[in-house]
Image 1 (cartoon, rainbow, N blue to C red):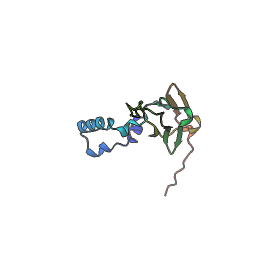
Image 2: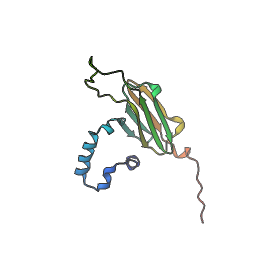
Image 3: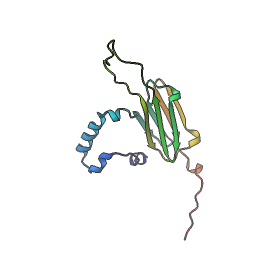
Image 4: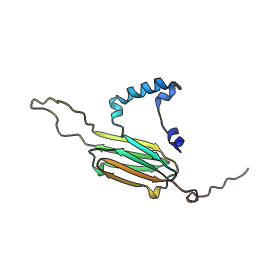
Length: 146
């Protein structure tokens, strides 16, 4: 089960071979990068019957979150407009850590029953349940013998 999900991961550090120390070190450095702070933090669970995702999206309105499933790929995107002015009385920004803009993630999740996908957003967490197709739900695909 998890092999399909793991095979769909794209990691540029894989190009450096099987050196786990380097890969882990590189991932730690990458995790500190401002570019990766914008990634939607997600937990993905796979069972025999479905995929279950929990995506942290604190401070967003439901109307600013979009979910799409196409070509065995789940895409989650969101946008946050800029925040009110953070400056002090002289116009200096004292500290600003919150992100705004557009964010998105994609997950390769094959064999999902598109008509049964369920999404709920509450308390800053998007919960998704993607039921898998039963073998009987999949249309027959006759193969011509040459």
